[in-house]
Length: 90
Image 1 (cartoon, one colour):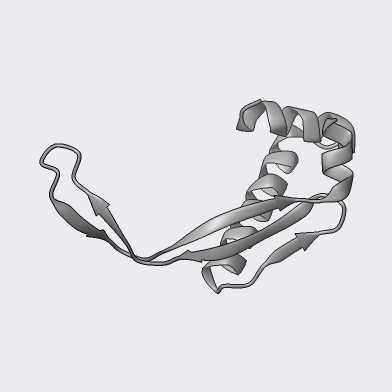
Image 2 (cartoon, rainbow, N blue to C red; image 1 turned 180 degrees about the horizontal axis):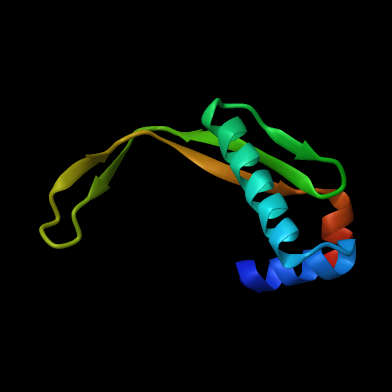
C-alpha cells in the first residue's frame, strides 16, 4: 500500500473526500516528525509508539580497502508495535 492507496482507504472509512483525507494524513505525518525532531515520543495506544533512538559511535571497516573507520553516532526514528497491532497481524 502506498500513500495514495492509504488516502483512498482513509477517505472511504471516514466518509471524507480524498483531499480532506490527504490533508489529514499529511498533518499526522508532520506532527509525528515534529515530535521526533524535538526528541519526544508519540504513543498511539493499541497501535504503537514512535520514538528516537540513539546509536553510539562504533568501529567499522571499509569493505573495499579493509581500512578501519569510525562510524559516527546517529539518532534514528524507531517504531514499536503495540499489542493490538501485533494481535491483528497474526
